[in-house]
Amino acid sequence: MAAIHSKPQLIKTLGSVPSRFGAPRKPTSLRCSAARPLHPRSYSITLLPGDGIGPEVVSVAKDILSVVGAHEGIEFFYNEMPMGGAALDAVGVPLPEETLAAAKQSDAVLLGAIGGYKWDGNEKPLKPETGLLQLRAGLGVFANLRPATVWPQLVDSSTLKKEVAEGVDLIVIRELTGGIYFGEPRGFGTNDKGEDFGFNTEIYSTFEIDRIARVAFEIARKRQSKLCSVDKANVLEASMLWRKRVNEIASEYSDVQLSHMYVDNAAMQLIRDPRQFDTIVTNNIFGDILSDEASIITGSIGMLPSASVSESGPGLFEPIHGSAPDIAGQDKANPLATVLSAAMLLRYGLGEENAARRIEAAVIETLNKGFRTSDIHSSGMVLVGCKRMGEEVLKSVDSQKPIVAVS
Ligand code: IPM
Ligand code: MG
Picture 1 (spheres, protein in one colour):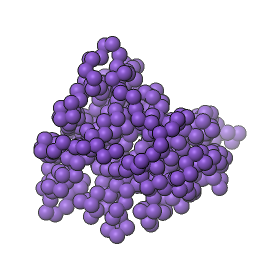
Picture 2 (cartoon, rainbow, N blue to C red):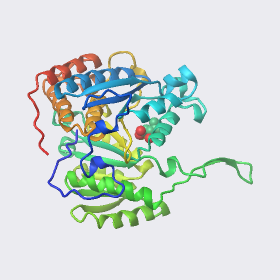
Picture 3 (cartoon, rainbow, N blue to C red):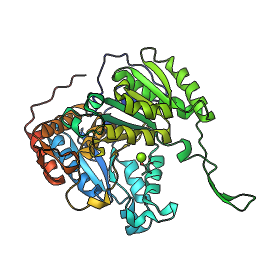
Picture 4 (cartoon, rainbow, N blue to C red):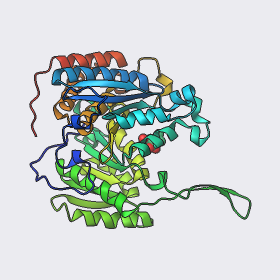
């Protein structure tokens, strides 16, 4: 898990940057509606287990959240809702209105995974993935944080040579609610020759670029103060504006060292010398691709969490991996990406830094004890299933000493 290293910094008024990246958050209890419990540190969490291994990994993360909460004096109220293929089967749409409404009303959303062979052939509106895009758009979570950290315990699981992978600790900040994923016009047509075509639009406005750039600069500032903006400004107009605006916003962050890289080069550099990167900011589609690439440097996508946040509403927290239908229901999944997503939920969604650190420390301890699910297993280690891995993390949580805030 990428530590967001805290440095002393001046708190200043930040235009459109989620408060969790700039000034300290207001106590979340202020956001509780009358229907919510009056306990000063209680939060409502919408759980979206989804499909495949989703329910297994979310169940583990939920138990760990509850126990960590008990240690930290935080109470969680869970609301489990259908999403993805599970929702298609239950009510015929991938994101039921009730699910989106519940997510919007809660303090944070924890998602497992969506999709599976069963729904692969569905028309676009009835694909589980469409539900995920609707959820991101509905919550307005424009900033997607995808850390890729090579854990010392797992460095041998990387497909890269040890000397290349060792010490990698980067984060991809992906713009999540714009670009070619959502751009209009889009669709299918037929040309003069009677041939079918499909088309999409890569489009970014100044406002969209500025706000994701500010999030990225804020995060870079709390890490190694190195930001690399990835685009295709040698070809695409949307990227030309992207680069111009990122340069403009850079004037607000003179302490952060900014560089630019074309996406094809970035894809190569990530494999050639991943340690050169600290914080990467990029558009929706480049971020989709580069974050998968970055994830495999770490050895297993089963370890990588993510956070998607908006300016003010609840954030969406999910593992980067998919629903892995081939191992679903067999107690083989690695729950750690979801457990670490729960840590991101605490840090970025609720401002509960100590609780987040508790989870991360417990995961490290569990790995140090040698417990491994099959995706990260190597000789001499103890092979465990999803549930047992969760139990071991819980044991580590319970044996922890109180954690003192460093920041
Ligand atoms: C991701 C996934 C999604 C995306 C799919 C499932 C729609 O690949 O979160 O990276 O393309 O954003
Ligand atoms: Mg992806």
